[in-house]
Image (cartoon, rainbow, N blue to C red; front, side):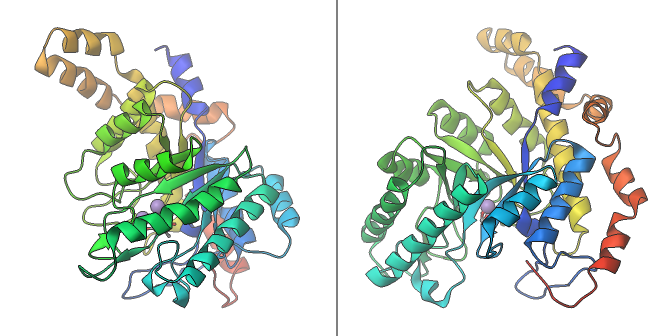
Length: 380
Ligand code: RM4
Ligand code: MN
Ligand code: MN
C-alpha cells in the first residue's frame, strides 16, 4: 500500500469515545475524584471534542443513559454537533437500579422485565432524537449459584423482551449485543460469550449484531478468531476497545497486548464490507482521562496502519504453500514497522496534532478545565 493510501485510510478511521470514560470512576474499593473532571454530559462531550481535535479520528461520542440524561435532547444534540461531533451508540443502563438485583430482561418477575423493556424503548426514543444509529446493550443479568434460576427460562425471557425492543427499532438503528462471561454475576451470565450472543441476534433479526468488548473473555480466548468468525457470519456489529491483564480492567487499548490489537485489525482489514462500529469502552481510575483517551485513539490508528501494511499477497502465498512461519513473518514485518510518522502525517492532514499527547500537555487544557470545573458537583 502506498504511503498516501495508508495515510488516507488512517484519516478515515471513525472512532467513538465513551462519555462515561471522561467522568469519575473507580474500583469497588475507592473512587479518586480528579481535578477538572466533567460535571455533566455537556462537559463530558467537551472532553470528547478535545480528543477529536487532537487525534482527528474520534468524531463520535457514545452516550450512556440515564447517566447522560437531559431534559432537552435537541439542545444536547445541538451542543454535540456544535462541537464538531456526532452521537455514537446509545447505551442503556440495566444494572444499577435496585429492581435489577436479580436481573433486568431475564428477571423472574414480569414487572421488572417490563420496566427494563420500557427503559430500552426510552433509549430508542433518545437515540432517534439524537440521530444515533445504534442501541448498545450490555446486560448484568445472570445468576450467582447453580439452581438459583432456570437457565433456559432466563434465555427465553431475555429473547422475548429484546424482541419487543427490536420490533420498535427504527430502520436506521441497529442493536448491538455485548457478551461477558462473568461479573457482576459469578455463576452464569445470561449472555456469556459470542456464541450465545449470535444465537440471540439470529432470534431477533439481521440488524442485531454482536459487540466484542476486549475485556469480556476468559483467559486464553483468541479474540481475533472470534472477530474473524463474526465477520464471516455478518454478525460483527462493533467493538468496545480497552485492554486488560486480569479481568475486565478497562485499561488503555493496546497498552498490555498491542499484538492482539494488531491481529484484530488484521481481521478487520481482511473482512469484506465496511468497518464495524469502533468504540472505546474504558474506565480511567487513576490516569488522566483525556490523555488516556488520546493515547487510546493513537494506539488504534497505529494498529490499523500496521494491519494495512501487511503484505497480503505474501501472506496468502505462504499460507497456500504450507509455509508455517512464512505467513507468521509476513505479519511480524508489518507489526514491527514504525508507523508513527505516517499516522502523524495522517493527523496533520486532518488538521489534528502530529503529536497529540505533547500537544495536549502543552495546551494547558487539563489545567484550564481544573480551574473552570472546580465546583464539588460530580458526574460520571
Ligand atoms: C460493562 C460493559 C458495558 C459498559 C459498562 C459500564 O462492563 O463493558 O459496555 O456499558 O461496563
Ligand atoms: Mn463494554
Ligand atoms: Mn466491560
